[in-house]
Amino acid sequence: MNRAFANWADFFAMGGYAFYVWLAVAFTVVPLLLLVIHTRVRHRAILQGVERQQAREQRIRAAKATEGM
Image (cartoon, rainbow, N blue to C red):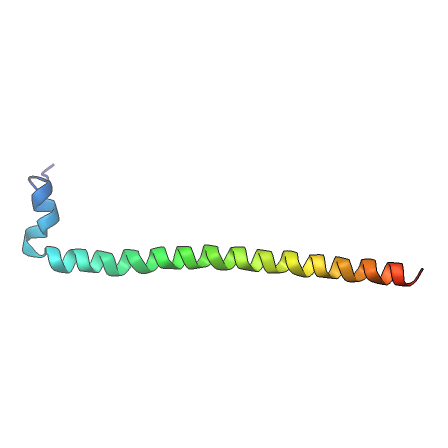
């Protein structure tokens, strides 16, 4: 099996097409990372919203229960 590149410098140079190759990698990886980060942030925000809503509903039920006594 032949190695495609003789050393790491050749790998990073990509046979003279490094600018285009690494730019394409960046345009792929960066949005994917941003998507993962955005998804995690929104997930936490949704869970916190649900927790706040449940706590609010519980307070309302407790207030109605004490009001009816």
